Image 1 (cartoon, helix red, strand yellow):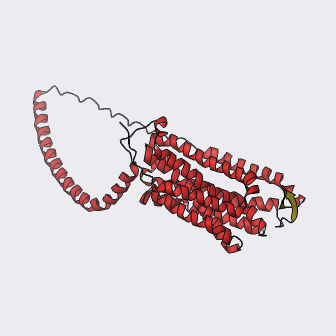
Image 2 (cartoon, one colour):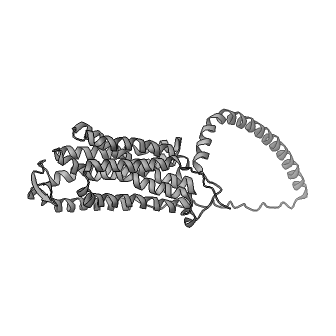
Length: 365
């Protein structure tokens, strides 16, 4: 939100760049965590029956490395955070311009000398007035010429700025009034439903991959490339938001995600296809986070949008909790492949809601 206030005409792009940095951390730490826990790239070959279902587990030696991994990662994170604390500082307040002190002009007591001084000053003032008038005329002519040349170039920029200033500049709502607008629920629930697909793929791709016999090193590469795609594509989703609209950018994300969910069960047995589908789902997940902050500001304004954004992020948090519930309980009753069809259906619900979305708020009088 701070970046949006600094670049109001590029809300989407600057949001994508800022939050894209979070995803790049996964690229490095995926390799670090895997090398600590499973340096020998061993497979999970120990079958254990849980609730009537056979699950493959790693050997005890690898499992014992997990606590050590958390301690090492905690040390690395602490060092990075300590450095970051010293890099953060408040913006310096602009200094007030110093007042110019004028020295008092001494008064000459000699009347003749004063008379001569007045005549000399009048002559200098007249010359200075002619010079200043000529200079002003020349400056005005140059400015008109310069403005004429830049007018066309600034036209497109002004349109972008006006477009991104806000969809409802004359509407000022409180947070309680925001809860009465249909736009809030369209954004909140649509992103919560469709966001579950990407988060489930990110959280469960290793489990699914291990069931198909993929090596741990390959799955680490899948997660790392997916993290890069997640982060690097966020400015692209923000660019679509700025150039087109929230509805267009979000619809693009949903169409790609729906296609991936319904085709994933048919292709996940093939290693290359598994890699491509997972990293594309990573990218769609990053697109969800990129849209929330700029659309909150565009629809509800900067001041109210800042507070509304917190609720939109809460919706993504609920999606994350849903993924945990799915992994713990639902997956025992429903096959993973079948569940991708359910995720695709939820994304279709979000697509229908998005087609009916309108940024303009109608205030009832």
